[in-house]
Length: 438
Image (tube, rainbow, N blue to C red; front, side):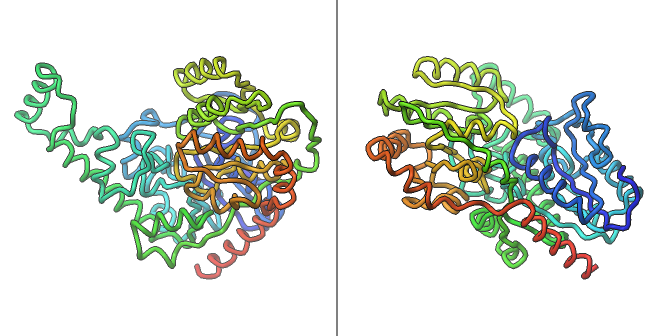
């Protein structure tokens, strides 16, 4: 625990931190914690411990191991995790924060705002994705189809496996008939009674997380797109959601030394996952079939089978895979990129990769969903394509190949993201506001 100081104490809670977790939310929490430490005593509580690490000796970071049911549907629908909430309660007593800043519920507990607010401590919530209205977080059905909304839990029940509680409600006769249909007639579709029970559980999840937001002192949406999605489900929250774009560590941009190459260098930088549109990008490169173009993927895989699939395709199409990277590697990476591509299938909130590309001086080709059109101005600092449409993406890549001066023209209009220091000042003003209202 941090040593006692006169500065107000701020408790940040999130799913993880680098180097264990390198997704956008985790990197944002880490950068914000560092930027706040000049004005506050900061403690970060997360749940991604995987053995001895230097960070575990840092008094400003408390890592806990994940729950035993991490990643399960039961974890996603559970109202609370008593084990994690016990640790939070202890930190509220020991650390005595003036404000708790919650950055996610996933893999933690779905009742953290209620827990903290009951003690009279203001809670600031930053919504990094669609988690309150989508247990998958990304509003994709079965990983490929954009979801229109939870439909009071019915859409969720058709998208995710039934939680264990749904089976508990089965009568003996219903259970026997379901097993008979599966074993004898090979019927795999979800029976109506399970679908109904599952929808009720997901509806209860929605109600719980709605109540969480209602008890928050301040709610931040990093993009207008995310706010629209939330308000579409819960219209009465419109006046409670404030759009405030993230800040980033931008200093590394000055270290980029752009090299020259005979070919035009297209690249993707980020985690390699299906919903990031990696398959669409590889297919677009195959369709492009231009010898003066090269494609490089920077980032690591989270799924072994998916990694093997992409590695096979990359070898066939002549795409380079450069593997995992650290933030310290970004100047060198963007020194070798002419055009960055962000081909997400899902409704990204405030995608880190697009904004990092601007810091690195690279125009962006991005899919036209979620918060991406807020970052990429079509025809000004990049191009937008129809999400999931490999032919459209290939056509946008041809624009740069057919007119190479487009890169420089777009580069001159790149909008640099706000710095993390500026953002920390905005967050500090919010902390002051909620403390005064206490």
